[in-house]
Amino acid sequence: MKAVSNAVDSERLWDDLMALAGFGAREDGGVCRHALSSEDIAARSWLIGKARERDYSIAADDAANLFITRAGRDNALPPVLAGSHMDSQPAGGKFDGAYGVLAAFEALRALDDAGIETARPVTCVAWTNEEGGRFHVPCTGSRAFVSGAVSDPAQTDDAGISLESALRSTLDAAPDIERIAPGFPVHAYVEPHIEQGPVLEREELPIGVVTGIQGVRWFTVRVEGEPGHAGTVPQASRKDAFQAAMRAIAALNTLMADTDDIVRFTVGHLSIEPNSPNTIPAAVRFSIDFRHPDAAVLDERGGKVADIIAEAVQPCTADTQLTTSLEPVAFPDPVTSAISQAADGAGLAHKPLASGAFHDAAHIASACPSGMIFIPCRGGLSHHPDEWAEPEACTAGARVLAGALAQLAETN
Ligand code: HGY
Ligand code: MN
Ligand code: MN
Image (cartoon, rainbow, N blue to C red; front, side):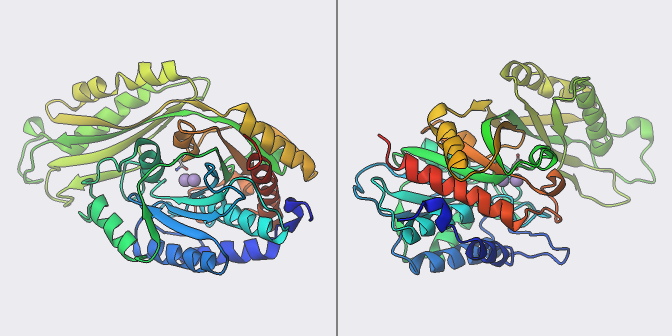
């Protein structure tokens, strides 16, 4: 029986990564694979087909989270879980999320090929809608897994399609896999992911042992004004929703100013109604993504957002809704030490590293001991068509994952 990390097949993993990147491939080399879209459904079907080539059990829950399980000696024991998400940003890359799912799937096959029988089952998972690019409350799947139900199923995408109908279409597309309720006991969770930052590449390190994830607050804001003729309504009597939104965003820039450059504040989504060059904007909807490693800063500055907006938009009005509130998460020793030991066992240098990006692991950490493995990505680039990770980096991360899973699957 060879070490499971040596049974990771680089070529098989890389071929899978390039094949998965084909679902929603963009002409610029990036990927657009929105959650529960036809591209996502096709990718799921492809992965289910590959799982069927092996003796794995396949299941999906009400949130369309996809679970592929390799049996252990005692299948009554809670499994060790590993994976990430297959949905992408609209102009995303080949590796964000996809790498974690396929590295986990490769780890299952490496356990097969190494002839290792684990005490616990080992399960690969693809979580639904981590990105929030289509349905703007992110981490739908991992939230449902820890809460037991899909939150806000009536929320709609920009085309007016509801989350619940998109879930139904996705689940109906794979009628013959087992359906389970969201949430089951899990022994430990490990999420491999590209770093989406520059540290590992800059320090020429193959592995990051993630110490935790900074906190997040997402808001959606709707500014209501009054439509009117662009050529006739005097400026003094206008209620221009777009001008008001710009005032609000300028005021938020002041609130979020940080000479230490630790605060992360982004307005990434904005829509104008009726969006016509010669009609004064009647309404504007925009997003707020605010992050910080300190919960006190998140509460203090996040708590002022709605009032600052209401003041700045006058004489328009605004409705500000907090849609995501994620506290900073620290990953505990059992998992981080299993990852470090697996890296040592594979002869791979590593360092502890915090995550600026959020991940499904931030939610799963409330249900079981969790951790993450980072691999370097070119220039730290992500949420970009040019996102790239070298084959050797992908293999290294999968080798560490396989070793960590083999160890965790034997622990009580
Ligand atoms: O936005 C994030 O942090 C994650 O990459 N979806
Ligand atoms: Mn991701
Ligand atoms: Mn992402």
